[in-house]
Length: 492
Image (cartoon, rainbow, N blue to C red):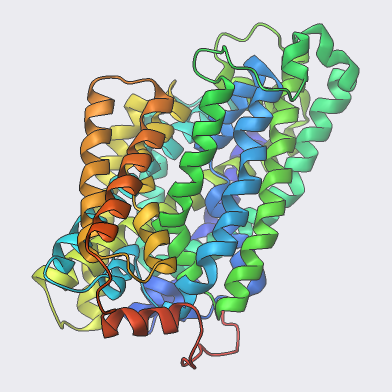
């Protein structure tokens, strides 16, 4: 136990050093918000990977693998082949070329006219729902890890980690987030394969899985009749994540910060491969943990218990640090996105226009404090249902994907159509959640209704002349005229 506490203290000291280093490098609000748009390829791969590799999916997804074997591999790994490759092919380059700061700014640039401000404001509110609530799911995942590996009560864990993340985030904003992500990703690349090897060797190899799993859970053929995690739910989760990530403000923030569009595109493709492999190793390690610990009452504890009971103290300490880094870096990442939305889309837009950079940095730090307090409250109620909570809070942000994709690839898609599609989708999803509709009838149906309404409204409007602002938007987004590039040097 002493070794684990020592490593945790050392890791905390490293984070404080990185935060202080980021603080010293802040010269403008763009540095605080987007790391000066100078993030290079390696740093971008690391921050994209660390932002996705979170304790909510990690602990929650691992519990699915513990219960249902390869169903967990589908749920936490294979779906990301589609999620991130589609992101790379559809929005990575256009997002960077537009030089925007938030998803709402995309709506402002693409959709002019009388209802432009309403459309932009609704996009701001929708993106804020996920970024404000999701960090609590990551914190809940961390509380599971710490309670198992250090024996600390969840209440103490969430209080300490929230305070730590707040202090660290306040210093350097997005620069701090990227610094944490780089360290976290190096640890992930080293210790996730180690975790798999520990499970594999102690369980006795793949042959032993047949002793604890039915054959259907060792095959990759679809299983449709599981209550919460049948293949219909997997397809829904995959589809929802494709839509979610297209509109994801925390991923958008990273792509916006890239040095140029080529870096953004290539980093996302590499991230696709690495995330799929790493999550597959986690799911397989958890499957081996069932061989070793077949009767766990709490499947969410499978992964941390594998570390606790089958590794020496030194490895336990390093694994603990890795899992803490995963959770903290993702929390800081999502917090930064939420703060960026509040400051850029709400405060700068409506309340405090044309203030100094120092004013907006101070405002960001105040928003961080409010966000930290709400995260603390939410996290304590999410333990035990981490993955399901994460799934349901993501449905609203996913509704932004259709107007974004239509806006990027269909010039005649109108502002009224974008607003109508958003309103119909949001109203339906609220009703579906309140009425407790089956999961596969929430997000897919909401997005389908959004697409039908948006398409119908555009077609009903006839063939009107394209607004010059839309023409300029397309020229910029698709690189059909020269735009001023970002600096070529890497400062991260």
